[in-house]
Length: 296
Image (cartoon, rainbow, N blue to C red; front, top):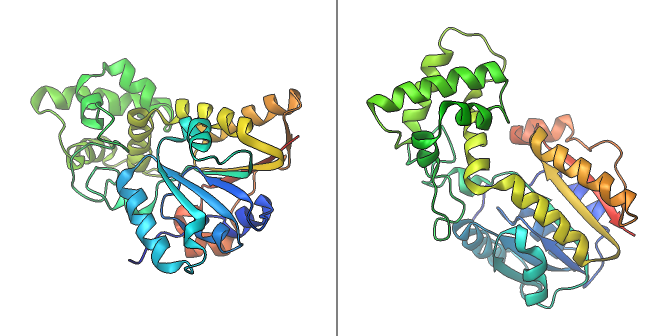
């Protein structure tokens, strides 16, 4: 099975993880599997985690088909949220670890799924990473939250005046018809934005805000970072790629707090950004920020 997922900042990830042969590394967000493949090709062992069972299985099949036979036993797959990284690592006898990677972007596999992550396709407004374990969908939020709650949710990713306008339009629209599919939300946002000149369409950012809320991504990130520090061995590396300011702020502040407690040493005073060449080859890399810290 081929994968069209392009891993972001892959050279930088491999370099900063300081991969050792037969070292233990956790890819806490397997996604399309590109980073895990690169780590395995350096002769290391990987515990590959993903909360999305569909994405995990797709990546597993792809990796087992493209990795050398001698390397495939060095990959262990775990269907779990990275908020439980400590529990999963101990369950698989994978502690201490030499490095942990979080790539917080959504993979091409997920964007192409029928769960409503992409506004370019017409699917149900679901957005749950793990439908078997989660109840609330994006449609549930759009149909039940008050206008002020929707405003607060959208303000995480778009300017407050835009968030307020869209929240108000959603409340009015659902009085006539409940939100069910992505095209329902796209139609409302398109109407609100008609004739307005903006450098960036709010569509992607509104979808991002909903995905974050449905999956409690910021809360889970905080738990995952704490857990990663607990299982890192001395001089183990914590490598995190974020794609929006809310995530990056959490990572930046966490690193500072851990450095003040003498748990981590920050190796990137400013985040590493993709080169223009990488952005040209993979436009989705444009907003990526990479931060690295080392266990003391």
